[in-house]
Image (cartoon, rainbow over all chains, first blue to last red; front, side, top):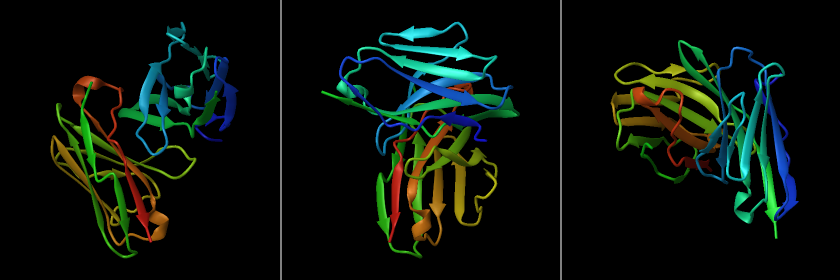
Amino acid sequence: RKEVEQDPGPFNVPEGATVAFNCTYSNSASQSFFWYRQDCRKEPKLLMSVYSSGNEDGRFTAQLNRASQYISLLIRDSKLSDSATYLCVVSFHTGGFKTIFGAGTRLFVKA
Amino acid sequence: GAVVSQHPSWVICKSGTSVKIECRSLDFQATTMFWYRQFPKQSLMLMATSNEGSKATYEQGVEKDKFLINHASLTLSTLTVTSAHPEDSSFYICSPQGAEFNEKLFFGSGTQLSVL
């Protein structure tokens, strides 16, 4: 079983749609959770951190369920510019920080 | 945020040649450097971790004699792919970490290596 699992997609949605991505992680000792966005052959860029209380940043909402070891990302009112791969990222302490990346979920937003 | 410079962005080389990739932290001191590799449609995989002035720690399955990492200063680390072969073709990304950033990650812009 992969340490961080995501549905690879692709998700093809029209502009204005709401789309949700899910992610599960296997290490119950995981401490920090993030969503990163990665464009083709570019470096990942931090989209948002994820907390148990949930957090929202404009059209993006992230949720963490520690009991189920499950993370979600909701994108409302999709824009063409949201087309990218979304990486679920989990970190935990093991001496220093160890970071595990999911393989990503591809999103295509069409006009 | 932190400014990271990685180059070259693209490398095309013949099989058997060596390729050096540089990663610089421009406005902070990188006490730790992570080097990742990403194959198409796959996740970033950590290759090695290096601390300034120390030998790198390689992940299982990564050949230390093939992927030479030098982290001689707090602002510069290099990854040299020695005797590159087509199976080494991949996207290589550095991620320098400063003590002040905790688990927050910053990345270089990546190097796409294509070995013919």
